[in-house]
Length: 314
Image 1 (cartoon, rainbow, N blue to C red):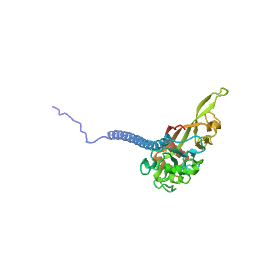
Image 2: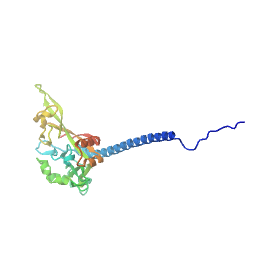
Image 3: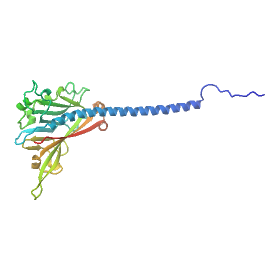
Image 4: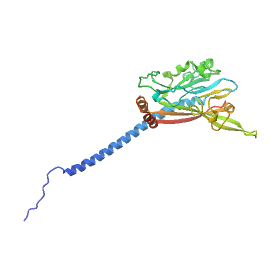
């Protein structure tokens, strides 16, 4: 009787088995790293967008509330609203905002007298003056330091209570001039609204009445005046005797005459805002970045928001 023969095999794996196992492991690790990278990028993008939306909401809610209670009166030559694109745009030359407006107007703000309406601080009146400005500085110190890493694009709001508004600002032919030294108060830390506002644009909606040729009838056409746009001018005043702007009427659609635009009725304002992510602010602060790299950062890490506010009738 023959004894069965069994082949003997030493313990361990062959070289081919080890190579196959290593290749499979490498593929799995590569896929995991790739998925993790994509997930982290998506998380960071989502986090940046959520923070940007909060900044924009803070700005748009605050500004919209003031515009919704806008106060103006006809039959006088006083300024009721003054808006102008800042000549010296905020930000260093290598990282300058593309559009920013200073705006001053009268409003029935509910947070006048620190919100204590009817309390001990309330000295009467309900018409306040409010001003907004975009600056590039440290939001904590309220100063711009060229060597500071804390500089950001910061939106400020200054509310002037009714008594001081009545004593110094109401009934002025030049509201910006009357506001004067309060511009410095506007930039103080206590007037902080939000940061990372790279630019904001104001588009005023004006209803213009035109005569229909030869028929004697009139039609009302809406005209949009966007401050800072090519040909649209940099300044607009809403006065008791009409609208005054340096916008070229030939650039407006539909075409209107200067007299028609002056006699128009301001019906609304569209607020457009671009918010940068925190990482974009930090990266753009680098002085030796190529211009194309800067444009790419702004394109990839900026978020746009807008809101249209109807203004009360005069």
